[in-house]
Image (cartoon, rainbow, N blue to C red; front, side):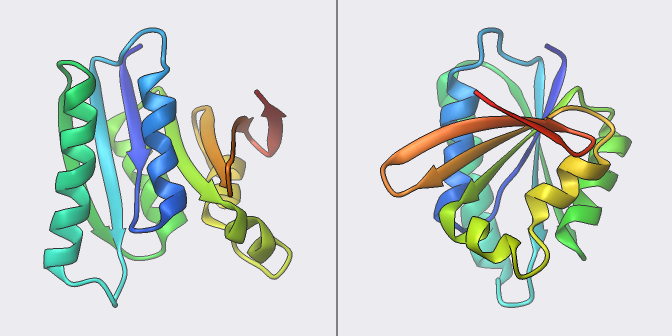
Length: 143
């Protein structure tokens, strides 16, 4: 596999991307680690988030990790980074609380799945249960 984009934030659901990454049969040549800055995050918080994920990814094995910090609408910035970096797949995490919010409006993972130029793997966490869904252009499949 060539290049993987992994979108992360400060939520517990986001850490589930690590288990997906660690179970990939063939590790990617490189990883683009993306965090979309929220106003409430300070640059120090963002730096801690990105350092944590970069260390975790590198602990699995040798891989080039490019860190991108963006500001703006998360789904739009993730999609923009995927196109600019010409990635082969996007990996994101989503928690059970995000599933509850889905009925009320915007959920970043769903917005990315619908508009992504490449397949999207979403690691779902809900309490003790974990699962992975694969989605692309609005179609979702459980794994």
